[in-house]
Amino acid sequence: MRGLQLPLNQTQRIRLQRAFEKLQSLSSKANSDASVTVADTIPVNYEDAFLKGHGTTDLNGELVATVCGVVERINKLVYVRGLRARYKPEVGDIVVGRVIEVAQKRWRLEINFNQDAVLMLSSMNMPDGIQRRRTALDELNMRGIFEENDVVCAEVRNFQHDGSLQLQARSQKYGKLEKGQLLIIDPYLVKKSKLHFHHLEQFGIDLILGRNGFVWVGEHVETRDKLCRIANAVRVLSTLGFSMDADLIVETVELSSSLKIDIHDMLGSEFHVLVAEQEAERRSLMGKRRR
Amino acid sequence: MFQLSMPFNFPKPFPFSCFSLRKKSVNPFPLNTCSGFCCTPKEMVGLSAGEKHFIQGGIAQDLRLDGRKRLTYRPIYVETGIIPQAHGSARVRLGATDVIASVKAELGKPSALQPDKGKIAIYVDCSPTAAPMFEGRGGEELSTELSVALERCLLGGKSGAGAGIDPTSLVVVEGKVCWDLYIDGLVISSDGNLLDALAAAIKAALSNTGIPKVDVAAEATGDEQPEVNISDEEFLQFDTTGIPVIVTLTKVGKHYIVDATSEEESQMSSAVSISVNRKGHVCGLTKRGGAGLDPSIILDMISVAKHVSEQLINKLDSEIAAAEASEE
Image (cartoon, rainbow over all chains, first blue to last red; front, side, top):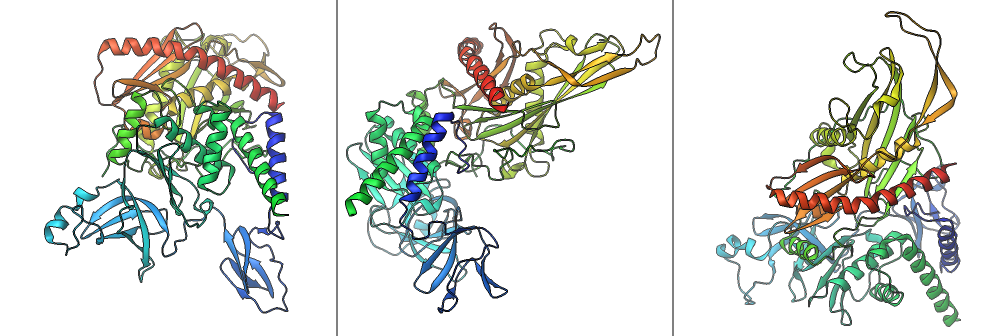
């Protein structure tokens, strides 16, 4: 199936398989069997001019994949996008990172990238809110703002010449994240969207979907059980491999509350199967509505 | 840098020479450490002050990070018979913690001090795939600690009294020939609570073990070794109802939790692992962690462990039975 390591009994296995088959048939891609493994030939019309992108190579006149992944075609560019790869940053992405080091006039953050990201002191708002030059005293008080192991939300500012990232946290919504849990999921599950900060009023919870696969679930008021439900919903969706979306997460939580499922049982096999079935239903309804 | 309060360290390569993998549906040795649950084990990554506070607050309110109560275990997943070369084997998954146990039996000579008992040895190895710090000799201290704790809980005292596994059932010819059991444990992925998972895996592996039947050829006199025929067909199953399970209670703040994840373990002050059998008898006790404990707390922990172990033994037995049934 998908190598899901869940203790499923026979009926659950069948139901899950049916739900996944339904989802696959509803997939909008024209050639949904576009997944390739290393050394597979990529079906391309050789008469058209095309550009060979990442993950491909020319072998004996044929275009062959060099990584395991999905073939993507954008205009004339053909490339293979590897699954479960490290995060591929773009300028303007919202990321959540953990401070590893407090260095001279900067913080180094870990963001599930092949290098540590850098957050300069000058890219950070001062606690007093005044726009001013950073003095030596500010530099000595850096630990008062962020310490080691703090969880920070920031935006990608640009790439430096050696390929590492520079971040900025200039607006009020960025900064240190407290009172909550950090979940680590695969980066490819978080797609670029208009909104990455979600404040779910009905639960009183902040949900930040970092594009690097770090998801922060934080609370405003004392709402621990809702927070655990949302965190478990993120875990379930990630195990099943569905893309992260705030609406989807909220729907999953509502499904669990409506069925009166215990918070801990959300991580059991039965709930995984139910979520897969619900997603298949939802997508087929969406497809019908479009036609 | 963030300091963990437990003395866990690193191992050496696993002596895997005689085992091979059965190529059935599930690959028992996945290369990545993440086993289905999305979150990667965070034991070596630090936690911010806010997160630590959140974990401790959750435990105090009886609502942990994944919604469990203080005395709830994660779902246990058991597979048996995964290593066909061994006489018995099992793999146990407890959340993201993944361990394998295997049992190998060889004919040997019993010791002169105890001629009517066979010998059992338990050895645990932490694979480098579990954590980067286990590379090379990194996990050695942790492996020794786990092996010693398991031996203490399962093998009883020096005279063999109080053992979970009865060594007198392993003798073939008294004083001359006996079975030597080598129980090996391998930690593939570590997300806390290794001791409980290993004990469960050993119990499952022993349920799965078939000791070949031995026919003694002729009556040998004096110091001669009797001839033995090892049967290829008939196997004797172990009686595993007497084998205890280990319940580890981790003290965080004023409360104890069962089955801690590695983040929760990083916040512990101390942990007590108590091995309880089906009759409710305590078979072994190990305390880890730097903080001292009042004796009344230890007594309270023992009673909590006895209460939790009833459910755990029943759950484990049903999972083992299901695994054996699905294996056939």
